[in-house]
Image (cartoon, rainbow, N blue to C red; front, side, top):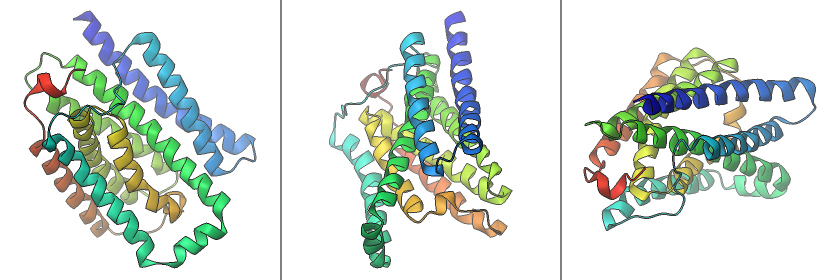
Length: 259
């Protein structure tokens, strides 16, 4: 029982520590150097991934799966559908404004840096939220009747709450909208991870979702006035993701959840 309690404490410390480190390190670099906001995010993500890897290696919180090990056509379908939808969304992003490709070609170094920002920041989030936190919660709740749903919901809540730091540069309604839909995303990414047994699958989905916002620079844009009605979209996304998640949780735990 002591080891299980220690595991839960370690998970909370990793989560809180990563938030404090991210805020502190990014602000330190912003005020003490002339580095661009993109370079700061990349450095923070790479350093955080390295630290988390060493922490997991030393304390063995959980095993992180990289190589896909799906078993049935349904496993493949569960994660191919969202990846395909977000790939189409990305394609439409360029189709709607054909001039975007010309702009990217003209400013290639800038957009390559943005691509690096998305890759590193998304992998950092997936490594800690799905790889470490969700994986460790599955171990912690190993003998619990509601092991998988509890692990999904708690890890999604932690993923969502980590976006509270965005209050530092945007208003409360924008942040609330993010908290709502990122909770749904956290649930979706977790079920993609356990159905594929590969961190690369939620990473790919997360990457495709984030890329248009970064290419449009909206991920770093200043805060702007928004109405409460802007929360309708995030609530709809939350309902869709929760439905998708709990429809496709496989009850055969011995087959999918060997964490």
